[in-house]
Image 1 (cartoon, rainbow over the protein chains, first blue to last red):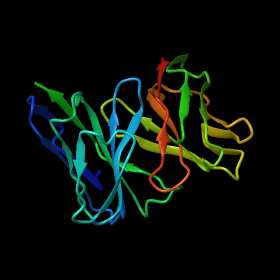
Image 2: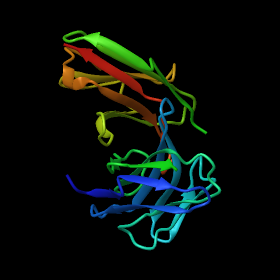
Image 3: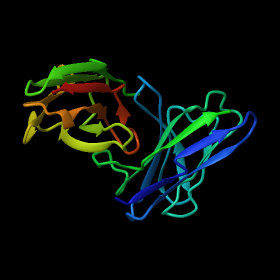
Image 4: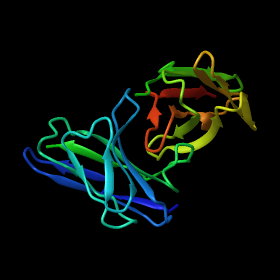
Length: 114
Length: 111
């Protein structure tokens, strides 16, 4: 099942290193999102973008950065400022970014610290 | 902002029994309440949703109820099957990009 693709599936980060997680969608969706999933904490919003070249911080944006240069792509960079980066990261998209829209999720990236 | 609480965190039922998962939300302006199912190692997928102008919605063995006055909504699964075993997340949203998720319920259906 295609639609929204995340890579890599597993990623390891060394201390002080920035790493970038890829998210690509071919659904022609305007809105894209990044969530962090920790055990027992559900999904927490990191950043979201409703249009190219524009994005907003979510609840836990500190230590992360994003870009939205193309409609299809919304990469997430985990910077060295994020002191506890180990988590499962999920990218999602929706048609227009409206409040009542279904989210389509990628298969996720597990980030671990070496 | 919106705060969504979900319980129980784990739920174990015998095959064929019913399962109920409950969520509460804090902001009365929330108007959309989806439920996502995440099977082990897979991506979350929408299984059912309800809007604030509806009190109940059914889809085969799954139903969701909404009580706007009490600000809570529930997922009901009847005649549970082993393939229903997964983590279920509730969510609530008010405006664009503002969806908030509950912490999840791990449902185990024992054959």
